[in-house]
Image (cartoon, rainbow, N blue to C red):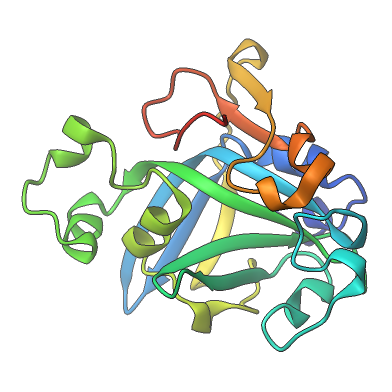
Length: 206
């Protein structure tokens, strides 16, 4: 298993990068504890021209400033004051493209993930599939918080790796993003990519 190189992230087409993240493995290593999951659902956000993006119109705040960094760093923000949502920054400096990781299929450290999310049964992830389904759940399971925003995805603590696994093309589906109705016509853009039939995929758009 090898970490993705910086060149993987520093590409112009955010949708292409998003699709290629499917099947890759998101890994956290905090305090010597390793947890990981295979990416099965993502959403692309196309920077200043995308009304669903935090950077639409060139908006810059203390929270989203990291979106303008060179690709290959984490952008983690708080949603509804509760959920820590993990995003991958792509493209080059001053082009604020981002990819929200919406769901993972657990790989390593499942017992630790269960403790982090407050589940008691060691096999409950097989029963209800909620352990890493949805962006808030996966961040909690992997121990990712807003203070990890800005972390290099080439670091020892937080990275995305390629273990050679590839989902068949026929399993990859495309749809509009979820929960971005405020974005008007941009809410209809086909920027969500997911693995059909995978039980950890977070849901279907309306």
